[in-house]
Image 1 (cartoon, rainbow, N blue to C red):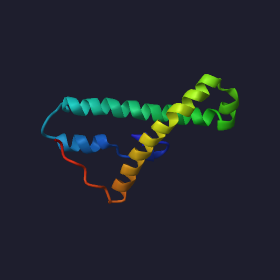
Image 2 (spheres, rainbow, N blue to C red; image 1 turned 180 degrees about the vertical axis):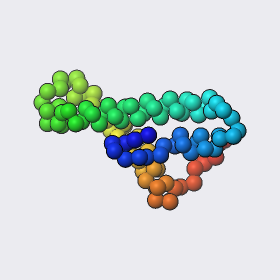
Image 3 (cartoon, rainbow, N blue to C red; image 1 turned 30 degrees about the vertical axis):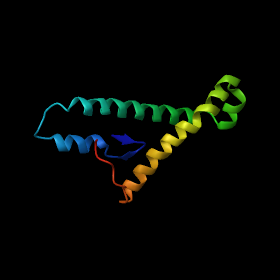
Length: 104
């Protein structure tokens, strides 16, 4: 998978490496995660493309009041979720990943 001119391995490579030789078709939960990951990446690309097409000042002056109010109300939750994911990945990449609780 490529991200804007650089090669970047995805989590799928890790999962498929673990399944190599054991199973030809990934388990249903892996396939659901694959669908979620693809959807998430598509959303990121769409948002990135959108932010390249219009400046915040333009959006502020051109968007209708309802759009601006919905953004104002919903962005803090979206931003908090994205920030949490980013922090987890950042800690993991730094080798300081906190222990994840086991199932149960």
